[in-house]
Amino acid sequence: MSQNKKIPMRPVSIIGVGCTPFGKSDSSIIDLAIQSSVEAINSANVKYDDIQSIYLGNFVGERLANQGSLGAMLADRLDISDIPATKTEGACASGGIAFRHAFLTIALGLYDFVLATGVEKMTSSSTPDVTAALATAGDMEMEMYAGLTFPGAFAMIMASHMQKYGTTREQIASVSVKNHRNGTNNPNAMFQKEINVEDVITSREISEPIRLFDCPPISDGAASVLLCPTEIAKNFVNNPVNILGSGHASGPISLSGMNDLTSFSATAIAANEAYAMSGLRAEDIDVIEVHDCFSIAEIIALEDLGFFNKGEGGPATESGITALNGKYPTNPSGGLIAKGHPVGATGIAQIYELTKQLQGLSTNQTNDPETALAHNLGGIGALSTVHILGKTNGTK
Amino acid sequence: MEPNNIQAYQCNICKKLFLPPKTICSTCKNTETTKISLSGHGKVMTSTVVHIPPNYSRKDPPYTVILVKLDEGIPVMGQLHNSSVESLIGTNVSLKKINEDGIYLFDLA
Ligand SMILES: [Zn+2]
Image (cartoon, rainbow over all chains, first blue to last red; front, side, top):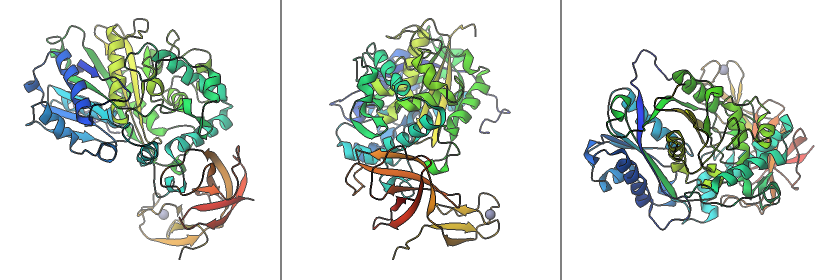
């Protein structure tokens, strides 16, 4: 496995977070990245010159925003251009990878202060162009050129889950209903309006059985976090959040490579790594952000992460277990479906929400959580990152 | 000229089949493979009816994309030739032709 247990790792904390509103923005891709970065740096009370490295998560900036070199560009615009700045790409999990590398470089003693930012600018492009750009997360030659889209791939997975486990259309729609309800309390969310099951299953056909309200909106946005060693975190803020576990794994890039069309192996492997590092199990987690790139993806994520047995995610969601006041409150931010999915920003926006939750400062606060889990998925299960966070002075 | 049947690659030592071609056999790490033709018969593993097509597709929507497990055990992505049927999982299909874009077009068997 990727974690070498012989290398001592020091505890790492989150001392600053920032997030732009998600939606249609007039700002350029770099201005979005600057906006969330400045918010994270200022809230951490560190000086710009203290930052030693930047990781920037982005998927399709060259293609849709016509801008490369985003890592160095962000360092330059923040006027800290001497430091290394690395762009990470892992489709929709680009942000999760940036966060993990920021964590690892501090944990392994290389740096003390690292900024991780995720950004995407998508609304200036046409829907066919965005659809084509997102499809590159799959295997173009072997699968996507058969006329398949990214929603189409997840529609095939949804049909498989319904067939194999009897998961109903209504159960899957209830993910979207819950996340839209959560989005009404998130001022940064693109959608802040409640919808019902009927709205979802009668919305516009995208790729059957996936309908419009099973999908996240095309959006612009950025999110940032600033990390430092736990031993000095309280010198900067009184409520740092600790990173208890981190996992990252690859899986098959294509549907034809999957052993089971209802499960993403990368999620389960990354989760096992993060659980082992933290010493926690699924039942110890108080609040969750998962990668609901489609409503069915939330159900599969919760099953792959061990919160429910395979096939039980649909009924569990319908019964309210994942609602804000349920046993496993999931996507209090509204998730990708209501908040928006500026692809490269998503993995770090999840950390933003969970940090606020553990600090008791979320606009959609769950009941005094002490532990949290973030799950970011790239492509059609091509990769996943999982992170487990803990409240300072938590008893767990 | 495109062949009119699905071509796969077979490891010369352990006879494992690959599609897409791999440079190394995942079983025995051998790098020698031979191109072989497949029957084109199989069963639908899953399907979707695409209503919003990508800009790299020349087909008018709606159309049906199917993942087919061929009798030889290999999954391939293709389209249903001349209909947009839902709930195809488990249905038998056979290759009708490979179109000018290299897409495998199947008929209900
Ligand atoms: Zn072999």
